[in-house]
Length: 507
Ligand SMILES: Nc1nc(Cl)c2cnn(Cc3ccc(Br)cc3F)c2n1
Image (cartoon, rainbow, N blue to C red; front, side, top):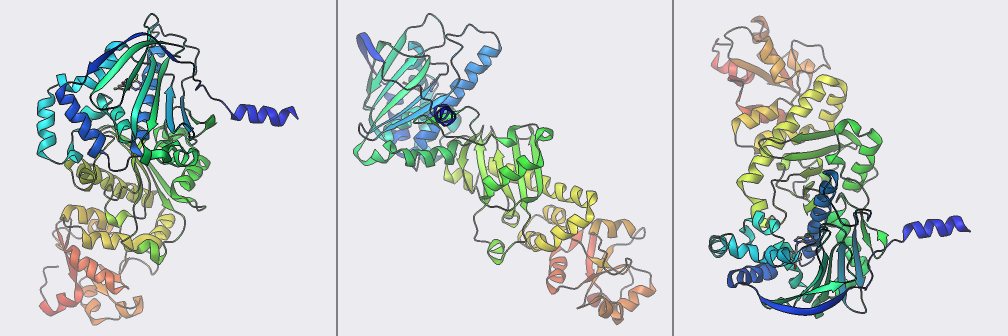
């Protein structure tokens, strides 16, 4: 019946036709020498997996659409502004081609020539020196991303690339650019070209996989699921969930969090906590983190598991399981970090160890600790349940972190019974310190199998007489953790067992 047909028709929508034709003479151009060298490096070694050319194309297309959207908003005179802003991808496994088309800005002849040649102008010698200096992985990616050299990654998989483009500027002609990536390219005018850019990659023999729909479907889902414009693959919508981390936190309902959490955690669980963090200093960060409802299993506790944090730059994925974005002790946290300050083709080396990633990790770690401290104040019962299930990770954090101030930050999450509180209630080191007498310099703790044994211990009696509070530790590892911590807020952590032996009375 028409309802079903209606449904199906609504499903299928493609703008990719084969109406474009070159028109008139084509003039050949040479790549400048430096550009050529650079493009070779980009095409051969910069990207480890070939599939990232798709991410580069989608990133360029989504930039072109976002810029056009902005121009339309600011009232610029835009060609055929009734065309929807979309990205279309088509695979043709008979012709062995991969095609991506956007309805964005399009390129003028000047831009066609400049966008690849600009590097030759903008001091590419220094750029190439830097390149020769360290491994291509460390290339300053702002330049690469900026001038669309990412486009050139097409020659990793294609031995011929045709580009048909119509600029949004009303009286610009449309062009066809074509090249086999060997050093020359041709430009001619073209007809039958819609506004935007269409790139047809004729795939090399060992890259025919990129003409198969299911393979492309997986890659698009992996890298570009949250790109802010609709992406269609062979006429079917390919990107689904909106980039929740970019929304205003107060517009996000718990249901939306639950759905998003299930998508990124790939589980049917739901989150017990979510933390939505946006800042522009010292870095641009949009982060959305979740703590699972479920109690961690032995598997979750193992230090080998990959991080469940996915790293994005402006909604385009850089890497899944970005295991250096948070410290290992926070591996139970799942979520997304998006930073404009992170270059799209961040190399593995830079991800492993760079000042930028170290700064990002420190900012995020301190913010997560602050979040848990705030949650404990908001709902202590819920926090204590969380502490019961996930507290081991904090202990690991203290003993595996080297910087003392960072260790003391983590120790703010710990909770212990105390001689000053009724059985069953727990306190924090901060609260203990706030109850200390003026001039007191030690935080005392006693490790015992139970509260009864702690309270009847001769060690405790001595301090009780002096009305000194003692933390009761019922797990042997907590004694090790506090010994390891050593200090908190300039007070010394002291086990009363050692204390009695020394019998000093500088309590
Ligand atoms: N999709 C899209 N849209 C726009 Cl507006 C631009 C601008 N630059 N690039 C990258 C690029 C594409 C083709 C060629 Br030839 C050179 C080149 F740098 C773009 N890609």
